Image (cartoon, rainbow, N blue to C red; front, side, top):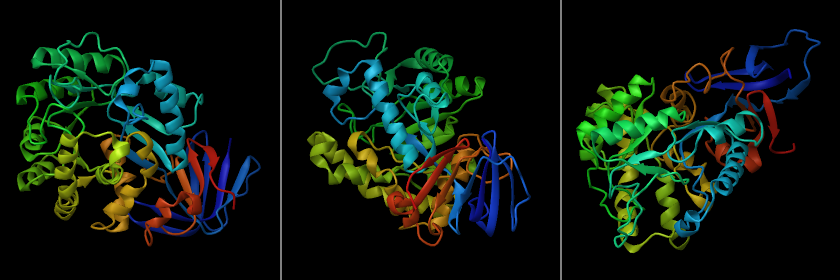
Length: 410
């Protein structure tokens, strides 16, 4: 299907360039041509979208989601079959698309079957960049056994966001297995987490040798390692061992920033998840110990973001929301705009995110030849970031690979 968008105001996030009276031709899932003024005549256009002065920009990218975690009730989730969990996840993927996200990176849980279902049009959703299961040490952030559970993990076949692997050889084997199953990156859990029952936020998980083994396997597969980490002791060790991306990073220090810059690595803050859990204590299902950990990382998150932004770190958009809290996915824009100019926040969800995903030139841009992943929004998000956070009022169309989703009737 060939689509022509006319009378648009375009926004190219990487450069900040905006053009008025612009037109774009979309064909075979890509941006086939574009320009300003009167478009060339064509008798092959199947649909014309008159933007009427609205902004056309690249589709949004959320680089930290967990599609499988559609409930905060861990006991209930443990009873789900793979099929049931997948159906719920695909429904959530459709909701993310309607919020304006045309690409998401799942950093724990999603698999090749879910990505294939979306790619084949069996369910509407954003492009799914999946990493399979994250790697956790015994007693780490991915080990959710209670303190009185003496069972040993076996097979690890059920839907879950992580798998347990201890020691260099097990880490290497687990990494190879996730890449065998199509993982496009590998997440390694190298510090304590809010929801995990057996660790502290400052706990360092995995040794440098284990992380280096994961990095070697990732590089051998032309992939990369991203790490879950809050505390600088874990962040800095992982960066020194070759990790390309850090998820969260709420407590980073000056050495963390130095390493991020030196290695041209990426930081993916996820501040909205802490705010949302804090405001919905009962719905979050967190224990008293977890709530204490939540407070520890929540209070440091915005300072860490500001420190990284001022230093020029590669910042990427992430939400990390779970269960019913996923409806607040767009609120990360509002939070970041407290310390960043709107255009920088937009870049974190478009051009910079595309670099992290190694899809620059394909997504996060309006360049000719890029995938036709676009938004048509009323208003200018550079002047008012609220244009992106209120899709019910401002989002007209989401276009993913040339397929149009009409979000709001105008």
